[in-house]
Image 1 (cartoon, rainbow, N blue to C red):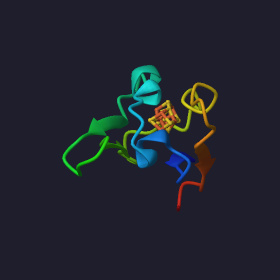
Image 2: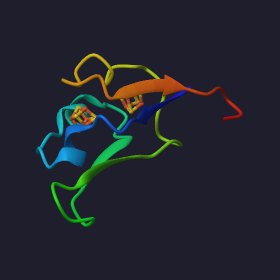
Image 3: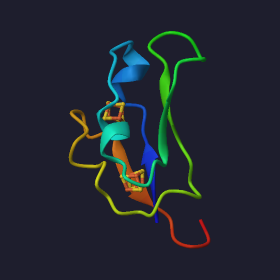
Image 4: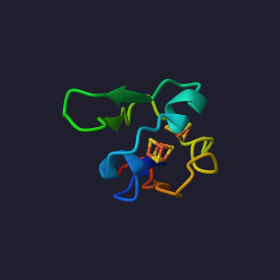
Length: 71
Ligand code: SF4
Ligand code: SF4
């Protein structure tokens, strides 16, 4: 299992947010502003433990867990 950030993420609407990055102890989420606009949060699937800590903190519920070991 790993997290997946969906299209509801506020960054896609130009609203700055890094709440999920701050709670990820595994440092699987990284804020990247190189794409322009408000930037985006990138997920390192290899680092993600699937702990789910980032799901409840997202103000718009943009994050979900998906997949298994073979995903
Ligand atoms: S599920 Fe856990 S490890 Fe994966 S991105 Fe969210 S907080 Fe980080
Ligand atoms: S907490 Fe939600 S809205 Fe904020 S950057 Fe993460 S996925 Fe996007």
